[in-house]
Length: 167
Image 1 (cartoon, rainbow, N blue to C red):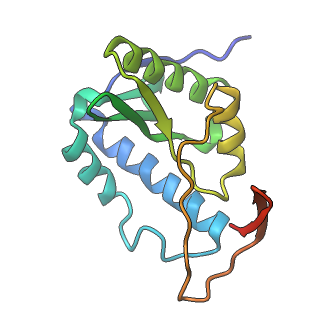
Image 2 (cartoon, rainbow, N blue to C red):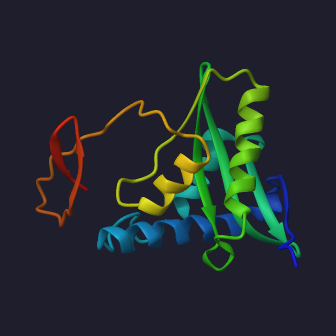
């Protein structure tokens, strides 16, 4: 039996559930980086800031039985757009929810005449990088390099142009 859910525009009544999704995404980042400080004490407040910045018309949710199980947004800058955020409730991952959310964002960006659509998964989110690559994001546009003064725990990582990096 196929997993049934629907994608629709964000509504004000979705706010608390979307805040919880944002918190879940932050907790995943804390886990993969081994850093409980990521996002601060109330990471769900970042959803409120994001909502105020991009506007509700740039957000879509996946719902099942009136419960928000996923969220995707688009941020526009001139003739380019970025997918931010993309999050699917952990218990609903690998069921096509993220794929449908990204397809919705891609379709919307195309309909707006966007020249470039990008996404910026964190370097340690290998699952997300693989997912976005499968979705067609195969071009590297930017590489962001860090110098860590806090002596954080970095893993030996990928090689680009013959140079070794940690992530």
